[in-house]
Length: 140
Image 1 (cartoon, rainbow, N blue to C red):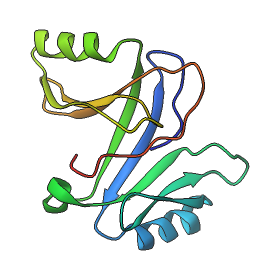
Image 2: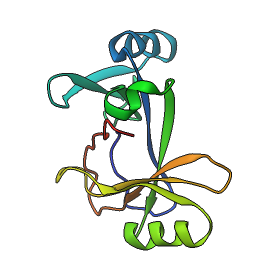
Image 3: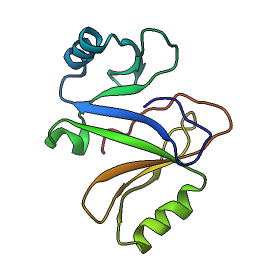
């Protein structure tokens, strides 16, 4: 994933999950000019994608592993919330579904995947006071 924002309601980043992250990483490098920085995810690398003029990642390109391996390639957006537990509760109350309860590494803080009443997926990530690089969960 990209770096966390401290402002609730903003887009925190995007992840693209695909079977072969290296070839898609190279595709986006050629098409939009992103550079990449690998990050280890346990036995393989996923990639932070960085704009040509910036040091802050704007997206992540991730290998499809676990439950994601059976899914077609997909982009997943991350939206920052002030209180993840409260937002997940409101999601369920408003007719959505919590697909993945809070998970995350100490370096990335908590996040969870929801499905809205129309069937669309979105990741909610808890705001931080300082930007912190984050990683994706391979089972999303």
